[in-house]
Length: 252
Image (cartoon, one colour):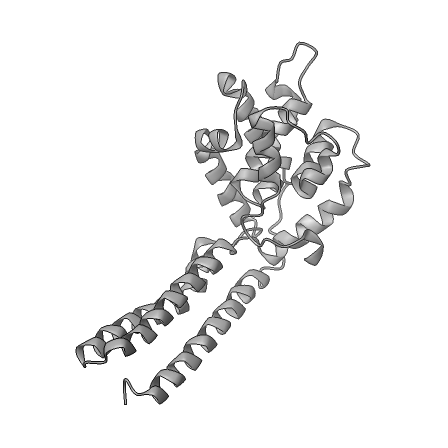
């Protein structure tokens, strides 16, 4: 009977099981894409984009600073075919004191194009896969919301708080999965391979250094992580984030 303690007990058990299965389903959707689609080697900022847009923008800013010429100019010609970094260089005045957030906002269309390319290479999960991952949780939340209304109509009183709380829990779980859903198994494997090639202590030119920064984050900057202005601090902070899997590359 809807509303009695035993019903709510089993309802809670079923909802917890659904949530656990949803997280397992998320992992399967990411891990089923094991092979990268054939194509060219990714550029340093594309590698950064495997962690998220903020990291890609940070790599571009730091790479341009590392590639500055004797006259203090940042040229698109120095970034060796990295289209996104060249685009940032051509922004001109935006390079005087840009933060990662400002650059990300100004170049959002290019970052979206970069993300779509990584999805096409199976390195990031598609939007369809994200919807599949969220569907069980959101569907359960809808059912629980309807049940909450039904309990209230039937005079359940405070008992309605139980399905309501479970519905809120489902939405919270969906937000967690959405935040941690992005890089596929192929993407993790690709990063693991590059991390062995571009060790911070072994790089010898700005492009290789940019790869190391994209992969290893602040560790690749060595002692060059002090206060060099807002743009530099925002870049270092962005390198500490992983907008997708939030796990070390070594665990791939």
